[in-house]
Image (cartoon, rainbow, N blue to C red; front, side, top):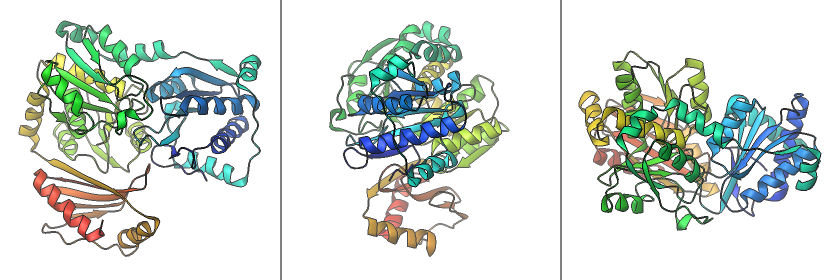
Amino acid sequence: MIRFGTGGWRAIIGDEFIKSNIQLLAQAMAEEITAAGRAEEGIVLGYDRRFLSDTAARWIAEVFAANNVVVHFIDQIAPTPLVMFGVQSMKTMYGMAVTASHNPADYNGIKVFTDGGRDADEVATGILEARIEKGLIVKTVTFDEGIASGYIRITDLYNEYLDSIIALIRMDDIRKKRMKILLDPMFGVSKTALQTVLVTARCDVDIINDRHDTLFGGRLPAPSAHTLQKLSNMVVEEGYELGIGTDGDADRIGIIDSKGVFVHPNEILMLLYYYLLRYKGEKGDVVRNIATTEILDRIAKDFGQTCHEVPVGFKHISSKMEETNALIGGESSGGLTIRGHIRGKDGIFASALLVEMLCVTGKSLRELLDEIYDRYGHLEMAEFDTRFSAEKKVQLQETLFTQKKLPTFPWEIKSVNYMDGLKICFENGWIIARFSGTEPLIRIFCEMETREIAESAIDMMRKFLEV
């Protein structure tokens, strides 16, 4: 059974992520492309450094070739944003990236992109799931046969992709500063792309954790204060001005300032939106998901713009951005994009834009954050997640969404939102409990005036849910 979540289809290797399921998904997509009369336009296909990713990509290409659908095959490790760029620039109906992004090492998966390079929405993935459920006969050829027939075409999109980023960044301002930067790809795929952009801008770039390790050094390939501890220590010890971490497929970032302090993804989004409005004079709304800081709402209001709230999943952000012509969209997990770039999150581009911000303003991250907090007030976020059994999930769903019970809080409740999980809003903060769309986890996020208050609210929610 193939079921898509908020970030594609992800499953445990050897359990559901197996050759037959991978081929079934490829067959379903090949039939959709053929039915739409777009077989010659084909599909852009890339893969990351996870175990089985390169092999799975070849299995996929072989199915498409057997169905006479052209495959633009990126035959080297590729950041997910590069694949999205390929779908957009080559105007294909679909794109696929073999990756489980930031999931644990025993997972792999496939992200699917549709017209324009955006994350496939529920309608698109529902069509594929329904086609698979009806039963399919998988066609396949060997990879060499696909090459010989011309249906598998080796494609190199790196130069075009990097040039598109460089064209959007004020490279001359960065060149004047010659920043010293330490990059942690977290054993993922960002090294070549991000290093190229930064070195082209005359930054002094060093790299750690760049070898091929399918176990990701024994940690999650997700940038956080915990997983970027080595990066933090080295930034301080060796005098770097900035530390940049990227997740496994390079669509999300984590930032360490010159003092070794982890900058929360909420703050990165705040900084870049404020920078675009205040220092670059641009205009436009902002789109955030339901678990991302509401300081963005205050910034938008101050500049006469609107902040739009959507469910978790970047497909919702990119869709709302297009609908409203928003300037920037992002999420508290570290993914963001801006108007005029690809229609999905891009850690390579986000990193370059953040470096530009520091060089153009001449201010440190802390100085810019203080400027924002002085102007809009301070909010702190706390987070908690835990795994659950199938029985516990049924119980939680009954409590939260059928009976719609609420915890007892010492603060007046302003509103309750069931857009994506349960979100309770107070006068000066909010708390949300929702099921992860990528792993069997329940996640609780809370933003309040202080971290202590946020953590106490999470404790109240945990006791209520008995997790």
